[in-house]
Image 1 (tube, rainbow, N blue to C red):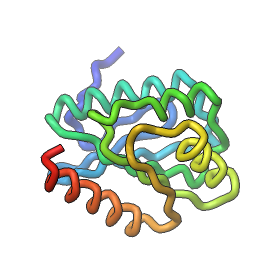
Image 2 (cartoon, helix red, strand yellow):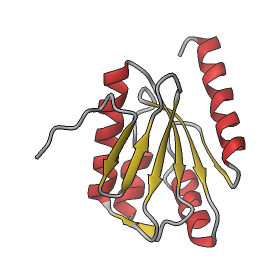
Image 3 (tube, rainbow, N blue to C red):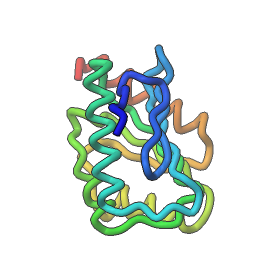
Length: 142
């Protein structure tokens, strides 16, 4: 098995990919169309986020495109909601259909993440919200 380069701008995982362009603070996670995320996928996502953050000595402001996701197990939702607020500083989810809205609401409400979360249908609004979180955190030196 080939070792992953966690400093890379694009990283493929089983459920899709992460993109973190050089000089940007937003990590974008793209979930494969019609993908059902299980706990193993959620663990892989968190492990990648930890390693990417460590490689860049940076916090994670995550934009998850879940517009075409098929679903996620209760274990996956719980695992993702328990990500450390010292790692994840904010999560914006992109939604487009009733299934992605339902899953987003589960992640945002039912599992009560310890970091700020919000659902959007517009990518630029999601990025602007993440930037406002980053600006607030920098002002507080978090």
